Image (tube, rainbow, N blue to C red; front, side):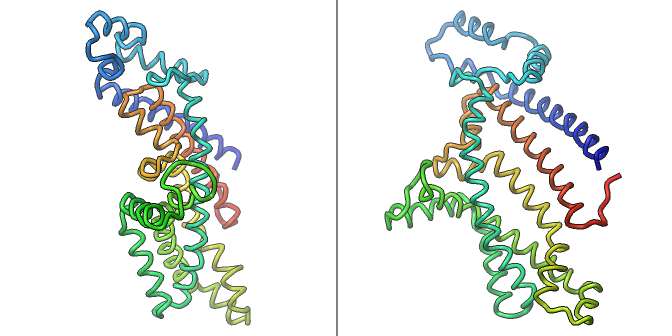
Length: 305
């Protein structure tokens, strides 16, 4: 296991390096940030001076290696718009995104596990049809539309919850529900299909033949084996949301990483975008390694050599 983790870490370094190269060169194809940051009446001399001070007049290869050299020391440069360290701005927004991610996934699991298990155990009954209808609706509704409808109903019409911003639990409910509905729908369908497959396995029939109670079979035998693909999806969703629930954070003016990334892209704020991308790539890499480790605890038959 130790050698496997070391190999994965080395592979992860290559992945993050590749992502940084792609993002860096694509960003520099979007245009000159001087056109956005300088006033419209700026002279060509002012533009040339700005580009020289920021290093934008150097060849792009030189700019990339300068960025890489500084990034290895943890310095992603200063935000062009905010004039603050780019990584500091990302880390400042990260707690808000973590808060939204964890609460959204908690709501999704709270709904999806009972719904998926009951749907599998009661296959073909009204419970199954209700759960699958919920899953179909949840995956069909666009998140941006759902967010707007929640704002119109609960905030504008009923005045029960705040429209936007970050504060207490009341500010967290609407954006979390917007994310959780789609996540719970996908998880419900996956849990149902895995449980149906597991419940028809030979070891489940053997346990029933030995007189093991149905509740013990579900909780001790079926749940553990059916959870392996669910852990994969859950980990990927966690990494994706931690990288920024861009649409939700924008609609609800949630001060997270996703909203920061959108603003940075509009402003052509190269250092800030690169800092966000690094955090997202690092999150995916770490999450995948953790998922692989969890596999070995859920299923002892899985060995990494």
